[in-house]
Image 1: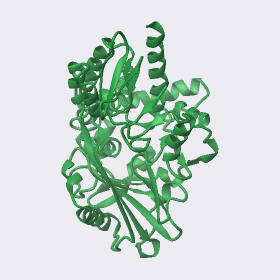
Image 2: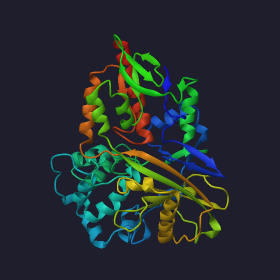
Image 3: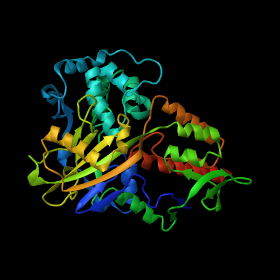
Length: 433
């Protein structure tokens, strides 16, 4: 087995830099520990003693309303007291059990939420959640593709409240805890030096099988069976099977001469650009040290950023003593043009929203900006049809597989769950041949 990577490092968007005492994530900050595949992978690569759990105050999460962060309620009594929604918005949520049935076809996340819990909650609560997870537009993303458990809850129980009650009854009968309508939420988990420890650990276990800056140009059929991997400079390698574990847009370019229909379907999966701005401050210059995980900004609330993490609060050792690190996200599906802003313009936008929401007037003593022109795959309406078309095309190409977060899940957990299944399918194809 060999791993060929066109990049000069492993890990894709999982990358951690350490500068001036700050721990800076380029992409995801961690994974939830409620999916067994990822902790098992951590165990296999020998990193269990390096894991760290998010601080308990990470449960405090905020949504910006009228320029100020409002605590997202975590219980029914807290929901009644919360100012995250208006009273009409709260009362509309109470009518969820009487919502209209789901229409035929692929429903957007926004339409599902508006139908079940009302327009205000759909825009504020669900829209902000979609921004935080996908940097996406809830009015364009497919519910079945992005939040399949939500869709299943409605199918199986007839509604969200009924699902919550049903799961509680089922958990009680089994002597356990329901955790929530879609299952236990899990605890956000990372490593002492950042999430890159995971990908570095996996690479170390591959014991020299990885070739970086590989210069892969295209994949074509081999003579007889298998595939030819054409590389920059005219070099050609042959393989019985190939797994393309790269973004759909990149995979489309690699298979353009192998199967034009497959390449076209892959190219139809869009991505949202994301800018990540790390801003470090002297704690003494902040009006107060923020508490909690961070805030998200629903559309229409004035701020121009997607949200901000209070990074120093989440995991230990993310900033030097006496310093505080904010990680501000900009761009996404709503404002893709932010990817082309200058560093100065990005800092101005980020500081403007920190000033409005948290009264931060100080200048950061540390700035680091990361750009992802094709940051997060967008599972827009029709996405599952595109995935099925890709799967049909792959049936014509035994021994070829695609994997990664472009298809059926964007999280670290999904990739950890999917990888062994892909490996088994490819091995079965090779053995069968």
